[in-house]
Length: 163
Image 1 (spheres, rainbow, N blue to C red):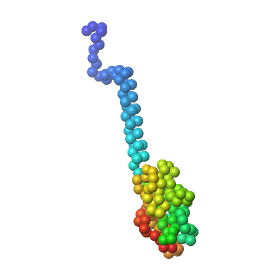
Image 2 (tube, helix red, strand yellow):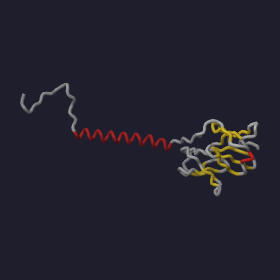
Image 3 (cartoon, helix red, strand yellow):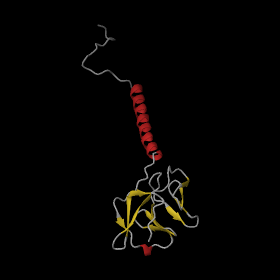
Image 4 (tube, rainbow, N blue to C red):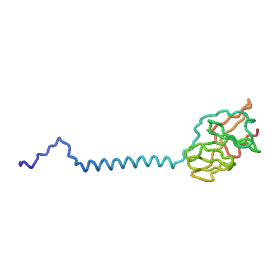
């Protein structure tokens, strides 16, 4: 055996060249970046607008709500009174779950996050990325005269509480 030849040892791992090691790190980093981008991009694109409030809650009495749209603080719901009666409209944007605002000057609901716009009467999308209109939720008059909203129970837009 000459001095230039080294005996091959079977118990030692194969040598990794620095270039191969750095290339592996680079491609591994790109793979992690691509996976993160896919997850974040999917979360942005996939609508998740669900009500954060679970279960029914009381919102006062019918006489507390004048004609028009009133936001119930902390509950992410609007109480709407018109000539037909009262309705409860979810304030949760159907795009990504932001809380929409009532813009009285324009007579519409607007999402401050991504610009979705919803019709005042029907809750339908009239602009922006939201995939569907705002949800109308259960509104009931209890025996004690108070109103109860249940955001987990969707209702049709035509369901009105006569009060």
